[in-house]
Length: 250
Image 1 (cartoon, one colour):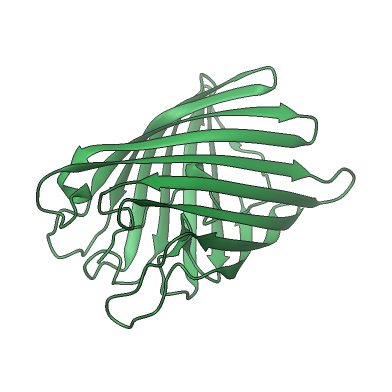
Image 2: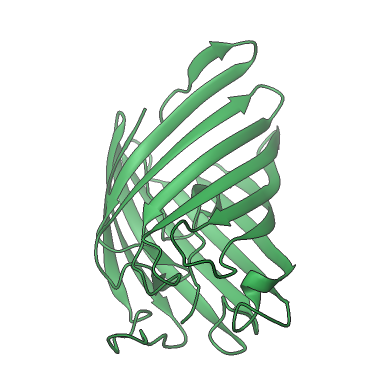
């Protein structure tokens, strides 16, 4: 089995929801709240399906502060081959972001929790950092996620402990005077660890979305450089495919 299930809204690969922007609710004292829900035709993480190439339901909720600190809970349904029988992934995120003109820095820690995973070493931490730069309607973003040595990242989730590095670049562009946005993604997972296919692999994708008020629909094409074969049914979970999304923010 391969873990390959870490998505979070903050990773902003092509596996997450494309949601229309919504104004966060003011809670007073500098605090605000926002959230969203998404239906995806296939939950892909770094090019690999977490749902046996079937649909998933996802949700997120964030509390932010005007200082730049935030905390997020993100969840998705998953298939039980991902994490020893668990049928859901819950990501707990704490971070800080700061904008300097057209440049935004963002960093924090993600904790990945898989309830019902049969007592194996499935849960782990992954610090992340990203920098994005806006050029008119185009935004370029570079991201690094590093899971330090932990048993959950071991090849057999027992020992020895392994670490994992993921580097990614993303481009997004809003087409002027339209509700349409375009995205492109390229990432590489460095192994070996429980998250990589052998020594590592590359994933990529392109997508488009249409946002109207708090609602959005999107379509994405995703692929990976290596095959991940489901050990239970023989399906290639990294086969190139098209993913559709329908989302709402509140």
